[in-house]
Image (cartoon, rainbow, N blue to C red; front, side, top):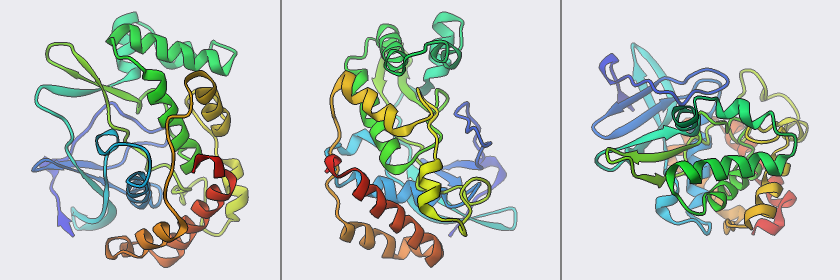
Length: 270
């Protein structure tokens, strides 16, 4: 457990559609408190499983679960190291697009009828602004992660790139997967409901309300750029580690069942 204080509180423009988690930064470590359920466990499990994929270590943010004491209350949550290099900042796609074009990227996307055209518009716009190449492959990785891990909260405020003081751009490590794995037990995915019905109810927010449609559109346009390599044993091992035990057995068992079902549904990702 770590105790954090008001001077450690951080705010930013990467908003969730369900509100903002309490977030802190202390000695180069970022902390996030759970807000609607078990977001910290979701961040942890997904990042650990990314170790067993085709992604390189610098392509995603690694999270660990933690208990956080703040103002005499104890929260579960997650922490991660600050991945920003000197002179770099995180810039959301929404902020970047609005700075250059004076319009909302989110609003522009949803004036386009075709899902593939929406994604192509995002990719071409960001590549034009930043000079980054292969942003489409990056988006395929993001949307594949979202489809498999059921991340319902990927929108233009938490998709981002990195920019330095010389206005040079880099791809941002993939972060903010806390809304995955049915983690919102407060509002949308109560623990006492059937997980298979809940899985079918999860909606996307990037270019379609259908997470699989988003992934397939990105694959058709930019190829399949992510392979998963973990097993059921890997999932069991992660969920049985000491750091995961701050979450109840009921929650950990649900995460296990969700992942097993997604492995059954998407065997071609392995």
